[in-house]
Length: 96
Image 1: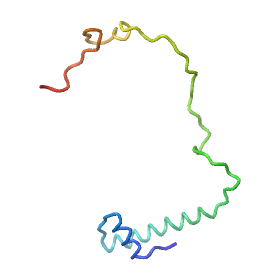
Image 2: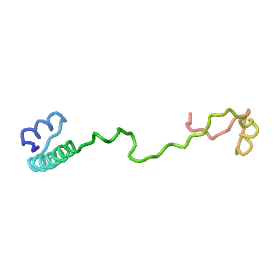
Image 3: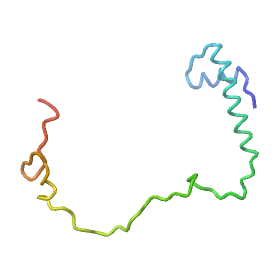
Image 4: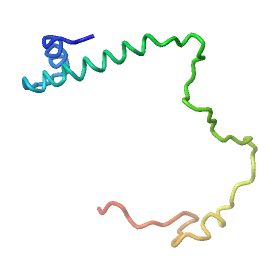
């Protein structure tokens, strides 16, 4: 499928693009090539291929969601450079 220059100009108007004559011709060629390639893909017989969301057989490593005891406040704060009222003390981000 080959696009006409008028179709490229219409697409450019829809996208609010101002194109030079050189750009219009270049994009006409590039967009036509993309559409021709997409048309070729339509010819591929995919009836025996099941739909998939992944291009390879990878699965996210998952573990059982088992409740466990977390760290105590003292353990969490044990390596903090500064602590105040059982919380991390950090330098002020905003002056004011």
